Length: 152
Image (tube, rainbow, N blue to C red; front, side):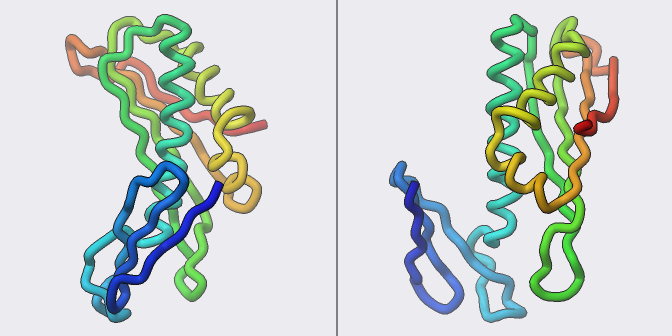
């Protein structure tokens, strides 16, 4: 895989990789930017969310789970001083559907965390991670199940 960024002006860049898609990168005005794109570490969090989300929904579809809506949220705490590394990551999996099996959800999260998601595997080697899940009934909108999954 190859990726690159091309400087546009000031603190603005355009990033691209093998797929050819482009993503804007920018910085906060406090450091000379104009708020015109993602911050690089934001993209790491988005990458983590996207990687595990694709795994989990793929696994649940194979398990014939009736998922009507699905969202993955990543919260990353950062060190206060430079280099502002991630110090803790919480991944939240939000499911809405009919009769979603909690065991299937747990297995999908486990497989993503331990086998399939390279972003999670890499970041997990250096940052503590916690996975939480929330299952809602699509018809009633009420929370049916919630829990935490930790590796090990």
